[in-house]
Every structure is written in structure tokens, then in C-alpha cells.
Length: 174
Image (tube, rainbow, N blue to C red; front, side, top):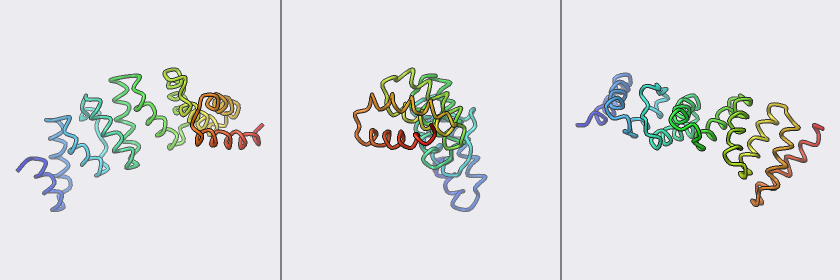
């Protein structure tokens, strides 16, 4: 019987703390063992930065899993770890901006999205997301400016329609 199987057996018997302790030990021994990280994310158990692997691919999988489970606090820890390993990692920055937006921390979202626009100046979706964050921070002029820039860049008709609706909505804030 493997340690991971043993931890699941403990969990099935209602011995949750014992199960989680085993899973944490597995992660210390094998930091890239994704099933153990997945198990922890399903238990809403916050990751410790010392328990996290150094492998960006594994961290991405973990962060996305936490994010999709609406465990934003845990996802934030992981995406910040990715950015310590690679400060320009685009997916980690995008997810962090989404987390900050969901948590109404618009200034942090704006900061990250501004960095992304420097990396990807031709990405209309980043500009659109920046406009949303600026709007939520009550910076209507900046929201309008970013929407206009996104409108010039996009070829996506769905996004273009959203931009036009948003620009119409912004008229009431002039």
C-alpha cells in the first residue's frame, strides 16, 4: 500500500487530520506529486509556501485547480510563488489579476494588468480587463482610454461588441 493510498484510506475512515498529515509528508518527499496537491486543494487546505514545488508546470496546475475551485487565497499563494520563479509569467499574472478583481482589490489588479500591457501591448483582452479594473476603481477616463485601445486592436467580433457596450455604458459617467 502506497502512502497516498493510505492517506485516502484514513480519509475514508473519517481520520481527516491524519490523512492530511500523510499528504503533507508526501509533498515534502515528492514536491511534484500532483495527486497529493490536488487532494489538498479539494480539502480547502491552504498550501504553505515551503511545501510548494519549484516546478512551474506543477505550480500552474495547482494554482488553476485552486482557482477553478474558488479557493482564491490558496491560488494567490501559488501564483505568487510562480512569479518569484519567473517574474514575467503571463498566466500567473493574469490569474492574480482575476483574483484581485474578484476580491475587489482593483488597485492590485490594475498594477498587474499594467505590467501585462507592457509585455503584450497588442493584446486587446488585457486592455479590456484593465478597463474593467479601472472602471471598478472609479477611474472612468482610464477605463475609456483602455477600451478605445482594445477596440483598435481586436478582430474578435464578440469582444468588439462587449467593448462597444461598455463604451456606451461609460457615457453616463462623463
